[in-house]
Length: 307
Image (cartoon, rainbow, N blue to C red):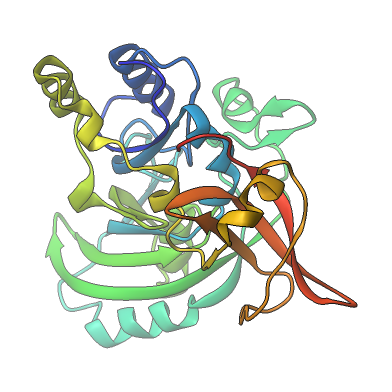
């Protein structure tokens, strides 16, 4: 299969890096131009959108979108990596009944909205040209600058006492760049206990959901059966979260040549990003601006041919 343009949503398995997934998809589909829209740690499973061909030109828009995760937080111990893969560095026995649902929901409420996080040492953040996880593996711990992220929503599922601690399960919708590991540690501290992230599944990445994701094995089977094209989401559909504007056919050539075009009747506000379409074809991604004639569309990405 060649000249693949669009997005395939992979359900990443545990033990694979995001780069591993991209390389497997690239080989299976015979597509050199590819890239994912947000790294998942090797132990984390779930939604990994991979952009192919012309789809790689929209990575920057997709990776900025909110994500959602199913989380299991372990209260009672914390680790070097803030997740279950690290060595335990602090433990505290918690008697059954010491933590209530009301306490947990109160902590969730405190962490809603914009918060600050200090990136964990075991992360891909670069400081002075070196990734933090490389420094951490050398036993070096450095001061990290806090970053602002946003928690849009928590959905509490339940909690249970086990092994002298508590396992708390919930769904979290958050902005790009949120470290769920660090969130678990910080929420545990707010409760007065050590904590870490025991399990994580990404169930949403922008408009993509776990229900539409396919495993690498399912993709392999589809390639073998000659049906892999059915798994590719066209670029226009992958951008369906953006408003669209229909361009008159007579204006189509000018738009494809990169000229700005007037937007009579457009209701979207100045500064908005929109899709320009004509006769079912995605022409490009444009930013709305205003001039003496009214609203116009200024090109950010123009798509020649079918995508």
